[in-house]
Image (cartoon, rainbow, N blue to C red):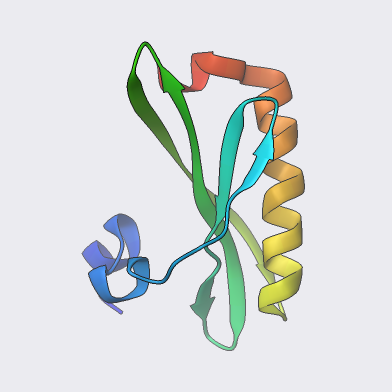
Length: 91
């Protein structure tokens, strides 16, 4: 995977439909990335503000051996991030 594909996403991989988890009015979309046989914690956090959908891309350094584990941890870390930052994450 090239550097720009890793940083900005690969259209082929982002086309996969992800079921969001709702938390305090935010939608969390876990999208773990496969890297060297492990999965990196990443995804998106979205919320509608003033009629516009705002999105924060969430990428962490954590690597886990399973996609399910990376998905679960992404949701937990996103919830903590939402508790700490709230809507300021979109500023």
